[in-house]
Image (cartoon, rainbow, N blue to C red; front, side, top):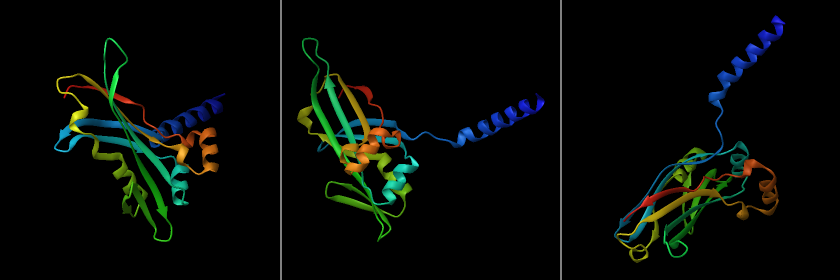
Length: 184
């Protein structure tokens, strides 16, 4: 009996010591704000991105990952459905070139190269100055509800990986919608 109790205490102690070292994969929003600039409206968002080892390995083997920043702004109306004057999505592609040993973050035709996976993760987690709308899209002196999220777009994965994404939680990486009130 004492032997069992000692083994149980050893297991619990090992679990408690190892628990802080384990972190959950996923995307969590740290902060987000919308501001008016000369060109229109832009959003700044900072995320905490924790990749699963399987996703990082997939990138290192040449599988591109597509992340989508989704942004919506709605204005509540008492007489009808909420008005959604702004709906915006922007795709970020992470890829790896083994020949050059470089990671690449692409937004449309614009790209930037990085030497480590940590660097590219750090840049993807801090999205600054993303243009979302022109000045006319948002009315002054109105109350709005802003929403933002960042997600892995599994529909753009190669077909064999799309099947894995359906069956495995390792391939589902998304933040929850973060909503806040805004009065420009």
